[in-house]
Length: 321
Image (cartoon, rainbow, N blue to C red; front, top):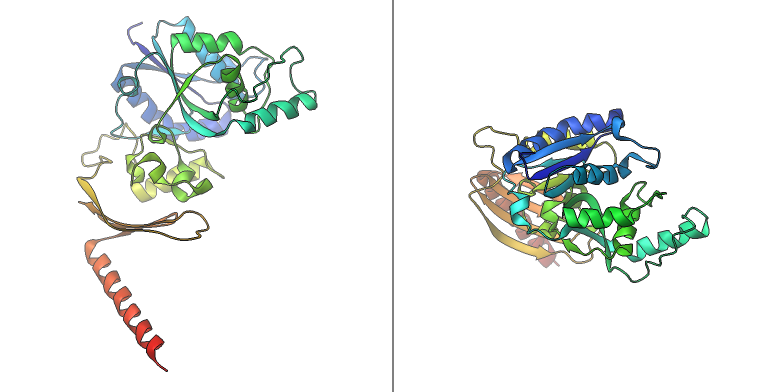
């Protein structure tokens, strides 16, 4: 096998095939650029022991072990790899499993205890995950070497249990704890949930240490409602940002960005962001909570003048007896 790396994804059913058509071209182009082979698992890979299609992540790992690839990358089919993304295999050293953090591992522990109480848990699996991990990790992007994949598959035995997200992620994290498999945190820029940019769960682009949607590497469209609509809406607003976009001038990196003003809003409903940025070569952005307002320089100057005039009039009114 000529490529050192294998990139795997899953698309089962008409809906998944629909949104994957908008995402897979970017993944395939990226795979070719970094010297990887891209694999799509579908209905032919389903097996009775997998309670949902999400558990084909296990099958992807098994196929990787049967291959000659040295490193494994799993990417959900609703992820667009954006233009300008570096080679992930160069950015993350070998010898570890990498995933993006989630939240407190207590959620996984609670799920295991509730499943056991309801009789949904395998009776011969008595491992107690309490306190074994500080947080759980998102399985939407998994980077690992053969050693970590082999260790995981040794402990990840059926029967499998559907977790609180209607998929494999909870049981995946349980097996990480049971196998004492260390995970290195992946910066959210490499696995960014699209809703975070809109203030979902109090998150923002700042959690990935970027200021523009265009500067995310792996954009995950795990969104409420239709993924297809969300992807098409972003294309309408930002243009196509996928790695396979070869149009001149379509780079998602500006010449530079200067923060002109920054304030933190007290007691916000969603998040506390209020930033004004000069995106050199593009325009002025005002980030207010989960909104981004785009202005040309001329329009922004007019807005500033209008705000100044309104403030003056308000002050005059306040000073009247």
